[in-house]
Figure 1 (cartoon, rainbow, N blue to C red):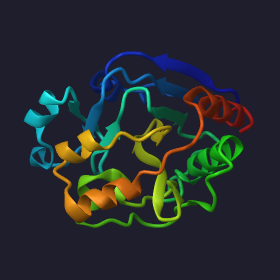
Figure 2 (cartoon, rainbow, N blue to C red; figure 1 turned 180 degrees about the vertical axis):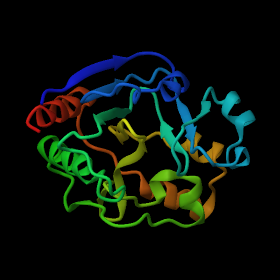
Figure 3 (cartoon, rainbow, N blue to C red; figure 1 turned 90 degrees about the horizontal axis):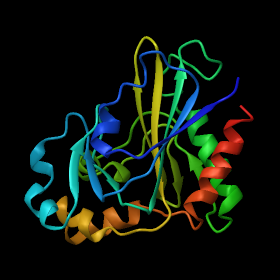
Figure 4 (cartoon, one colour; figure 1 turned 30 degrees about the vertical axis):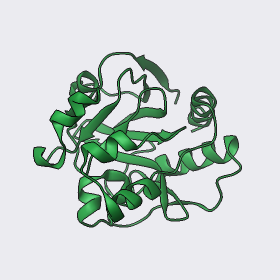
Length: 220
């Protein structure tokens, strides 16, 4: 089964609001982030982020329809792709803990192909592992399918699903600019250090990583 690829150049908020699961087909939606954006989880309290400071720093704040902590989307420095599959696809599974594992394996193989400096890449299995800071900042937690390296997160994955199919929202970084994000999330001291350590960049160009992902997807 072949994949259909789309480039999205609209706002982060508009894309999160788009319903890709009405009549889903195997598809990859590549997001071109134009403005630095903090994305809060669906049930995350507004008080977790300092929206006034974000406005002063030129950072947008929006919300997604999946759970978890805040995700940082720095313009130009993030590879963000949503993978959509219909129910009944050979990649579909009912078990929400197993469902994202193929996604993590795909990312792991793509990163290995473009960045040999990242070693010991592991795809997380089992239940979500989190704590107080992880509930505020997504990359501090470890969820099924996500890709880790030496305790830090290389690929974050969130999952949205309904009776029609599943949508896996994935992101990785090609460079890190975390000071604005940490400030907006009120992370200082030890929390700041953990936030920084939790974000592990891929040492490769955005287009190079996207090309590797597309090539591997076409083999599925």
